[in-house]
Figure (cartoon, rainbow, N blue to C red):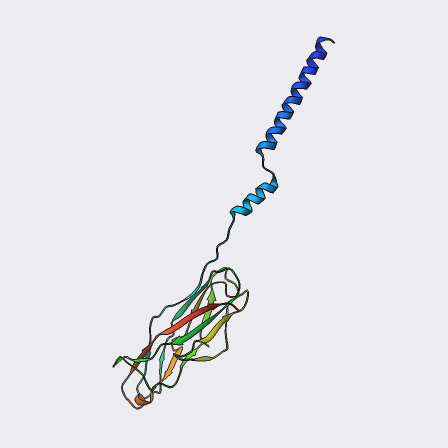
Length: 202
């Protein structure tokens, strides 16, 4: 064997050895695509938010003009947020607390009529990114009282996710004047509180 053949053999052995070392290093240090995917799936988690409703008014104040059988008020604005991410839908209910005559601070005992909530002039606007907006249970007016919550707004499955602003008209809430005050010529005023509640589910 001549000197050049020995040199070539040594070079081939060195190249083979270096190649083997590189392959071993790659196998040890580079994770497979499967292991990367598994690790990413393990670390990613999603936490759902809450669902709630907030009214802009704590108390509703009714003003009655002398000689009128009705007193009117604004129901206020509502902010409805569904951040659960479930898409299960929801239902909005409302009832009133007992009505108080502000001049005497007494609860009205002979009040037999309900409050009328007008929705014809109400608007529902969703923030950017919100799902299909909810709908009123029916058009026109809702008769509400302080006994049982009344369903007024509804979001079906896949609707109502995100944030919505509900704005009522200026005279959106009306009440019939109690019998004892119908013939009173004074400008009487009354107040109550609307209790809004939102229930998750279709």
